[in-house]
Length: 313
Length: 265
Ligand SMILES: Nc1ncnc2c1ncn2[C@@H]1O[C@H](COP(=O)(O)OP(=O)(O)OP(=O)(O)O)[C@@H](O)[C@H]1O
Ligand SMILES: [Mg+2]
Picture 1 (cartoon, each protein chain N blue to C red):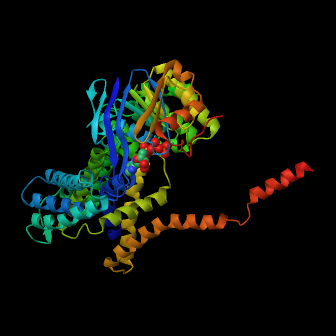
Picture 2 (tube, helix red, strand yellow; picture 1 turned 60 degrees about the vertical axis):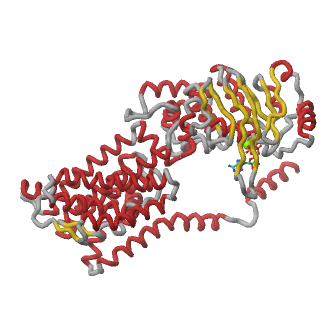
Picture 3 (spheres, rainbow over the protein chains, first blue to last red; picture 1 turned 30 degrees about the horizontal axis):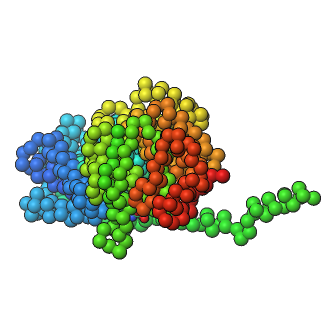
């Protein structure tokens, strides 16, 4: 039971990252690979700050802010210097690997040990376990983030962001600097990813140089799972919730396959296959349907000919 | 008043694909002018409209709108003066957003966007009223996604969006060309009504010579990146399609070539 519960807690905290991926991938249609680096960055900054004696809440916000800056770097590379989004994300991600190591003073791993964290406040105050406290705090955070995103994307700026993802030429002709909207979207997205990394590091009580590896694939997998589970929901709030749900299910699946003795290292392969299959299915379906619906003779034409032929007689 | 002075634009400079699309083009548009623009394929009609909208910087010359020199202003900055409807019905609207969301995005054309709520109740009343004037029954479908509309409906909505916030200049680039004849006629009629009612200064590119003669108060013909014929008022009204073809041959020394040109018999 314990591993399942911590799976759910992980799913909720990683869910904040999935919301970040959702903003770029779903709303802006930008595949942003900064995620792997900015997630780790959030964890590194926060653990180092906590160990330096900074208040854990402030330290967590610093993780969020660091993610924001990382996203802004990708955004500037992409919008100001017109580097393709995928490449801009990879550049930032690779650069962050060195930055993250520097932040942790050259160590690949930065344990929090007995230091206080936002999560230990809850374990101490309520006398609950680490994963219960993480779950509780995670749920509160996720609710707050969803409410803020729901509000933000309903505002004028938020709507301009959505429009940028839908029809860039149109919203530019309506006076929006689409470079700015994309930059903002990338920064916001990575701020959430940094926050998620900060929380996950506090839950597992350490930051690790590899903790964000494959984050983008986890994010995409969670979005896909969420879409399968909640269908094509119309309400924006439900869509955001489905990303969280997808994340929770992803980590439950992970906990289960681990319990059945699968090697933890194979999980990445499993998620990559899952995303590839999910992206491939609609294409395969379309091909199949076009083939199936093809007929050599034009049924409608033949029918029409018969009818007019009949009329003439 | 809008002025284009000595505007030139060459695409792909210094390559084998070099193409001079506008060459030393001059045009003065008076307030309230409704100008139809005709010309053969590649004459530079779209390029002139794009230059006005700021889609790309021009190589030389100046563009002024009501005395303001906007030559170096990027497209999004110029948006506050200019409303546009494109040839492709997909280009003017966000398919994944609701009709009212699209209208509210257009209502804020050229304004600073803040953290206020995008869809305001009092604006919704205005949108419903405005949609009703289109006569397409869209006033009951405010929260439908624009992607559900037909090409003609989308084009009508785009037209409304372009004029919701009165522009100093309305640019219409073959905006009925992708529609079937009946729908095209309807959208064209709407265009004339909206332009007249709001006394909008407009440029309309068309490939239908009849329309070009019948609509608006002024007609310009383009060839090779220049304006080769400019006629207004009574003289324009008396024009025939034959006159136009003749003028074209006279000015350019070639036959009128536009594979989409309809003589409009
Ligand atoms: N972005 C571009 N890059 C390169 N060449 C271009 C570009 N836009 C236009 N051109 C070229 O400039 C010339 C003028 O094109 P333009 O689109 O203005 O013609 P048009 O008068 O609108 O013609 P049509 O009736 O076919 O729409 C053409 O030779 C075209 O190939
Ligand atoms: Mg054109």
